[in-house]
Length: 608
Ligand code: ADP
Ligand code: MG
Image 1: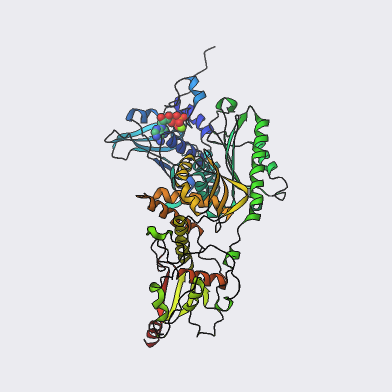
Image 2 (image 1 turned 30 degrees about the vertical axis):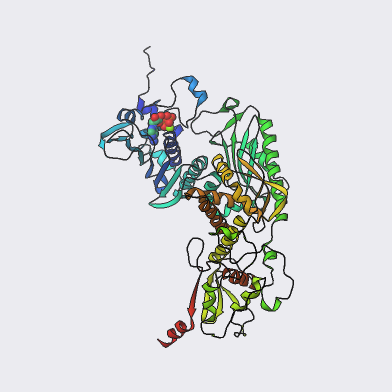
């Protein structure tokens, strides 16, 4: 009998391999994104058309390929990532089998443009069904662009097997999320049919989660942190009250790879036991780091399963860490500072004889730019800026000399002759506070005005060393990256001067046991993150400007947002405090805090 065994031709072998590697457009997305990350890219663009059926393109600013490598990269078992079998145990890259590009090129039209930084011109290669069609020199930026068109063009059965565009797009988004959540420091731009789906800036993990899943998720996250010899756990779970009927966002990453693991999933659910109704699902974003020699990653390219040596210990650690963090969060709302109480200061003129709630005093004449500001005694508020607003047409209006309380003084701001109105302010569109003044009306933007008020209050506190703070019954632990902790240490004295008290600052966590009185406890993580971001974006040229940045950032975070309904007292407080400010007419960022419309202007409108 003659011999019948033959070696399969490469293109056939590639097509068979492609069946494993490329199941759908989302698989191409995954492989191309991972290659871009392995190439050290800091910016990655993903373009897809028709849910990837017509086009999947990834453009990166990574290290690019030489002309020879660009050609070789499409050969089977062509990889730059391992050389010996031992390398398999020290993998720091996503890919290593050298199969993805060869597989993709076997079943699609592929076009590559790539250039290394030291090259003038790059390489341009076109491949269809494993055959190189064209190769030339091209002018292209450093990095690599790989466009995969007409997936499964030569395997109609597979092409027909693809699901509807919405299902395929869902798979693509899932792959994209997994990659984006593993690499928050890489910027991603994701387009579908020429419209931008997501634009993710370089950020920290929490910011990345918020950027992917929307601002609302921020308040739902409880940070999780634990370090032991067998595992380090980082990440977030959703607060129990936000558990969803449908399975929410549930992500496990082990050593920076997305994985699925039913056992660990169960550990998370177990931690939520009794906190959420049955049939509801928590969201979680959990990053586990374990020594590589204690796991067995199934090296199949598309599998996400994983086996741990210490599965039971991991289960116990994960469960108790989450339980602990949830417990910490659960007591927190009880201690929440209730802003209504502090706004409950009798500002209205008729109430002025009643006893006022003790509160932080503001020195209305405080000038943050003057060193003599150490003088804490209250002086006459500087009125020139706004006085004219209220006195233009009323010549015999004379502000009473203020006594000790600035409150008394500010009551004269109002034109009480308009007595049909019970209150002197009216909130409109949950955004503006309208008040009648002698010369017409004033529209105050509540958010910008409150920023101004807080900004001056904070600066006052920082320079006067008036450190009133609310003590927390249960110290609060917050987690940050190392870079942010370093930053925090630099500004620690300034933060302490406004009322933050740190029980400990560790490598990547801080423990707070006191916070400023006007700060709510449940959004501290966000507040700090915003603060760090603002400081990073600002280049302080003096210690004052650093202080100023902190005050500005905190004022921005803490200010009453537009869209918040304010009761009369709150409206009046803003109005009065604003006009006791040094610079009432602009926000700390230079925007107008109010506009006036004079009676003449109004009349003119009728006359025309
Ligand atoms: P693997 O990632 O397993 O090594 P691939 O087939 O995905 O195999 O890629 C083959 C090789 O091509 C990689 O090892 C790498 O050297 C090169 N390569 C692929 N994509 C890029 C890219 N975006 N930038 C630079 N090099 C790349
Ligand atoms: Mg790869």
